Each structure stands twice: as structure tokens, then as C-alpha cells.
Amino acid sequence: MQDLQDQSGRSNRALILTVSFCFLLLLASALLVQRISNEADDADRWVVHTLEVKQSIARLLLAVSTAESGLRGYLITHTQSFADDCVAARDSVPGYLEKLGGLMTDNARQAQRIEDIKPLVAARIQVFNEALALAQRNSTEGVLQKMGGRGKQVMDDLRQRLDEVDQEESRLLEERRVRVSELRMQFVIAVAVMLSACGVMACIALFSVRRYLHALDQNRHRLAAYNTELEERVAERTAELAQASEVANRERRRAEALLTDVNHRVGNNLALVSSFLTMQQRTVKSAEAGRALGAARARVQAIASAHRKLRLGSDFATVKANEVLGAVLEDIAAGLPPGDLIKIIVQVAPLEIHARDAVSLGVLTSELVMNAVKHAFSVGDAGEVSVVFSNDGASAPFLEVTDDGRGWHESQTAETSHGLGSRIIDMVARQFGGQPQRSRRREDEHRPGTRIRIDLARLELMPQI
View 1 (cartoon, rainbow, N blue to C red):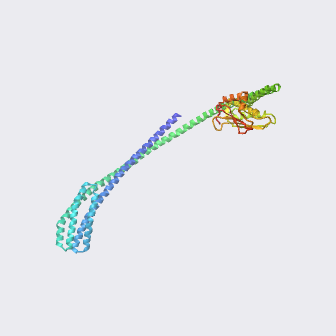
View 2: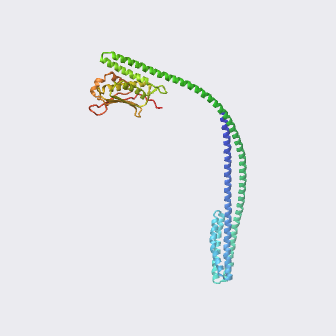
View 3: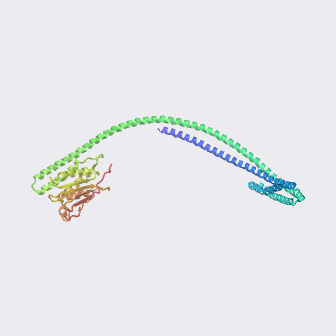
């Protein structure tokens, strides 16, 4: 199984490395193509820029030539439209010159040439203005002198300077066109290299994928063999566990039956002892001895009832409190004289308690209820005794026995506190970490009743499953 995992890990790593390398190569190629494309775009923009400069030079020259032609036409024909064309062309010259200067900001040498041209353009415009003024005064000789002398010299100088600017732009245009061609060739080469590399990497990736799929197929077959072997082992182990579980269940049922039988036997034996005590009670002559034997018989009967109802849980260590206390209280109710008017009301929560505490809790409950039955009511009185065992959601439970009889008061303490029943109650209460707390049940002068509450802090409650 470890070999299968190692082989699968190697195949996965090889495929991941191949795909990663292909991705990096494609990324590098894309970045290279992007860079070349950006440079080509820049070169194209510079070519367009150079063409715009040459076009602006041509427009400037055309405007100057148009102004000069308009002036000559006006001198010859004295037609106002020629003068208007001259004025319009003259007025457009500064704008063309300003635009040309703005296009030259990237080239200091050319920008300086434009600065040198500006005085010539201004001088030529001045010549146009003076010639037009003379022409309007019909001074033809003065116009010819102005146009042929200083005007011709300015115009020739202006043309020469603009030709120098145009030749420089033509040279730059040629260089930039060559650069564009080089970049396009580089772009084509880069694309070709990228496509070739992609083809090679595609072949490598295809080979790696085929190896990966082949390894996956081998691993699948080997894994199927491992699964078959594992299923056989699981089936064998399951059969062994089922057999062991059956044996354990039989032993458990046997132990449970044995414990139940032991508890019943103990309960029956104690019931037999209770019967002997009853027979002995009937034969004694002394009333005091009879009462002592009756009390002993009741206590033995309470223990017997608790033992007969010890139905242990699945862990053989816990019992339901309501089953044990219910059995004890049923026996007490059944032992009351025929026609007795006292009722026993049971409110016992089905809490899980340890089996070792069940009998002690039954004895404590029996003593409290028997005391209430004996001492709370006069002969012939009707009443009720309520038994509550719960924890009200807390971690520690409590036992509370109340009656609606003539009530407990301080004068009874000396008479009853030294009795055997009271000593048993105090002893068992201390065993569970509590002590009896006696109080009136209600405010009634005739039958205030009695409430005895014992908090059982040491009585361990088992978790509910």
C-alpha cells in the first residue's frame, strides 16, 4: 500500500511540474509578446507623430505661399477676393506655427529651429501687412520693391529653414519606420518561438499525462486488489467479532440472570425473616416487645422490597430510583390496616442511581413514611403522605416527605429524637451528606402538617443514556 502511495505521489509531482513549467513558459512568452507589441505601438505612434509634423510644415508653407499668391493676384487684378485670401492665409500662419512648435517639444534640436523660424515668420507677416497697405494706396512700385527686396530674402530664408526641419523629420521618419519593421520582425519571431515552445511543451505535457493516466490505471488495479484483500480480512475479523460478541452476550445474559436470581433470593429470604418476625410478634405478651418486633419486621420488609426490585441496568451497576422506592412504598401501603384512611402519594423521578445506594435510600424513605403514618395522625383520622424524590435539574437530588396531620412541634423533639427510627434516619442522611430539615407544611393551628426534606449531596446520579 505504501508503494502504491509513493508511485502515485511521484506521478502527481511529475505532472504538476510539467504543467507548471508549461504555464511559466506561456506566461513568459505572453509577457515578451506584450512588450514587443507595446514597443511596436510606441514606434507606430512616433511614425504618426512625424507625419503630423511634416503635414504641419507643409500647411505652414502652403499658408505663406497662399498669402503671397493672394497678394500678387490683388496687385495684378485689384480684385478684393485675392486680398481676402491673402489676409486669411496671413492670419492662419501664427496658428500653424504654434501647432508646429507644440509638436516639437520632444525634440530639442527641432524645437530650437522652430524658435529660430518664428522671427522670420513675423518678418514675413510684416512684409505682407506693409505690401497690402501700399497696394490699397495704389502704390504698385512700392509693393514691388517691398516684395522683391526684403520680402524675397525673408521668404527664401524661411523656406530654407522649413526645409531643414522637414529633412530632419524625414530622417526621423525613416529611422522610425525601420524600427517598426524590426519590431514587427521580432514580434513574428517571438510568436513563432512561442508557438514552437508551446508545441514542444504540449508534446511533453501529453506524454506526462499519458504516463499519469497509465500510473492511475495501475494504481486503480492495485487498489482494487488491496480492497479485495482488505474486504476478506474485514469479513474474517467481523465473523470473529460476531462470534466473540455472541459469547459475550450469552455470558452477560447469564450474569444478569444470576444477579436477578440472587436479588430475588435475598429479597425472598428477607421476606421470610419478616414473616418469622410477624409470627414472633403475635406470640409475645408485652405490648412494647410487640411494637419493637413490628418495627423490626417493617424495616426488614423494606429491605426485602428494595432487593426484589433491584433490576440492574445495562452496566450492572445502576438502578432506577422510581422502581426501588415504588416497591418499598407499595409494600408500606399494602401493610396498612384494612380500611385505613391514609393515602400515600408517590412522586419519584426515574433517576439512575448506583445499586449500592438503592437499599439505603429505600430504608431512609421507609423510615420517613412510617414515622409520618404512625405519629402524624390520630386513630381514625384521614390524611395523605406525599413522597417526592427529584433533583429539579440540579446535580444533587433531594428526598421530601410531607403529611397533612397534626404536625411536628418542638415538644415532640425530646420524645422522638432518641427513637431507633430517628437514629436510623439521621445515620442514613449523614451517609448521603445531608440532615433532616423539619418544618410546618402549612399555617393551620389544628393540622399544620409536617415537611421533612433531606438534601442528598453525596448520592451519585448516573448519567442518563
